[in-house]
Image 1 (cartoon, one colour):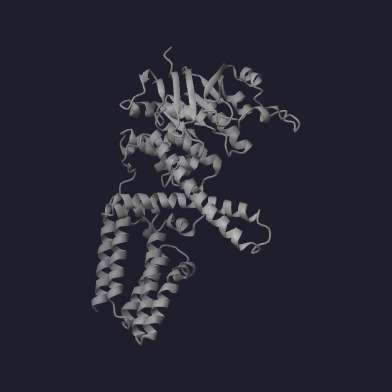
Image 2 (cartoon, each protein chain N blue to C red):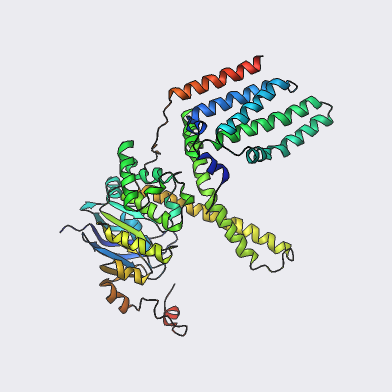
Length: 245
Length: 236
């Protein structure tokens, strides 16, 4: 089975000298949903920003069998859909329909085709009622759904979601969970919400100080790193003393 | 959640809302030229112009009182210049300045209240406004709310740590200056984030247009009738 994402020995250093990624290797297979766990500042977002060429480090990346190069960027970006943490940054067009059609139009589809794709993606995301709404009239949950629709409209093979549960209330989170479960694409999800990770992911990886230090079952990784909020006790402050947050 | 009144009005449904934005922009331009060149003491043409605007407001189904009140935003400026002209002994010019600026304000408000911003910007671009200006206006409008919300949060956060209002003017000034700097930095980082999101969805430097504008016969007829009527009123 050809891996959808194959990363070998990826390292990256920011301009200020911070070593954000250190020899990361990772594989994503079709049908998988992988939770990306780890402390704040451990390199999770930096890692996913490499997958669509937003950041360029040292090492090799292949997306759906295509090596990531400057020339292959348009193809790679049509294969890998990225939903960012802050939906306000992703919804920049004046109306919902125009925003969701932005990707398909950039892929060279005609206006009619782009509208059809956008409408179909909005239907999948349960947002067909908001076609002509302005993004700032939407709630946080609705913005997240529209942001996801904007990516789905490009028919990606892989979905990358950075903290998709941020700002969502419990019903909003449940809705998102159901939606993600229904989508056939392989997924890579950065999250701190352990309940969400357990419910949605088939595998987990753990980042620490720029290194991918563990890869395995979600429950197993959580137990190994004591990566859970519950039961949270005020006198249990082991990690705040030991780790960099 | 924000609800801007004009934005809500602009998404209404009326014959004026349905017109092509270019037709409305051109009609507005002709109206402003006719108004500017009408003598300040020409009561009949000015009354007809005003009646035309009121008719437009009623056809568009907009609340006349609120709209006419909102258009008064221009009065502090025109009253100042009017006062200067009056003090200089040119009372006719003073009256002209005030009435014409107010009518112009009503006309502009009528157009923006019956045209959604995306269509208004498409119309402006289609009439030759540089794309860069249109994009700047589009992004400014989109993120104005986000940034103003951030500013309000920061103001609240600062106020909640400042105790008695007015007690420490100097520290309040410093806090405001700091907040402004942070807001600027936030906006800069947000711009980077937006750019990242655009690139992730295949942006290659050109903004694709989803709904191209199409002129209908009704649009042409409206433009012709409006221009003919305005010129006739002006010439009479």
